[in-house]
Image 1 (cartoon, rainbow, N blue to C red):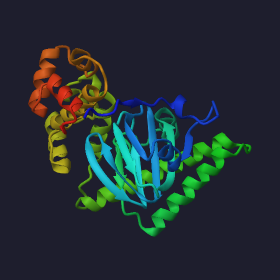
Image 2 (spheres, rainbow, N blue to C red):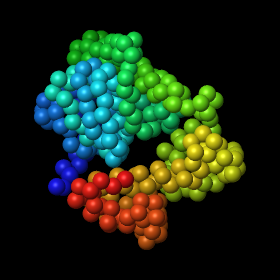
Image 3 (cartoon, helix red, strand yellow):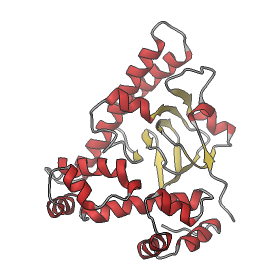
Length: 295
């Protein structure tokens, strides 16, 4: 059976009745009931989405990776991330969508968007204190969004900042628990942020090393020490993730996908993609259309 068509969700289509809203709030039940609790695969361009489940459970996929969690839990969906969900009918929770550009302005020079918020993640098994903190903040956003009190936009923007910090803290704490103390490396985080900014330009590794004022060898050693992969492997992995997204969920030709990712030669892109995934781009697209699970 073929997968459902990809839904592209621009911000203007999910705004409430406020044409100048700086963010959008709705309960999880709004889309759940409308879509019979099953949300087909889709992606948001230029949007960050924050979700808190206070009751029920959800299973789904994010960029092809399956997950299943029960409340209380947090989900953060980064721009361009392909995701689809199936909720249980008793699910209750909150969802806030913020333009990524707005978050960049709010967080200014912070590294949040380049590191913890650069890729989607799920935080399961919140303790009671964490769950209450999430419920309080999301409820505050819901109240501000629905009312028209003076300073509404400023209050919502302040809440959006707190929301991003709450998710960053939760993600960082989970990251720290999963790794030995001292394993996180500022250089690696800065590198990942740069990759997120420039991976479509097909810059060589030397560009990143020079920007970070280190040698390519030093950068690769740091990446191996922290993440177990070389700097070049991490860069290529990000390019291929986007290639798989574009091939699976857009109608762009292989040549157009190659061009989007900075490859001047579509034939070289096809060979590299096949070496990385085990399938030629056209074969990969055909398998996805047939509903075959491919990475």
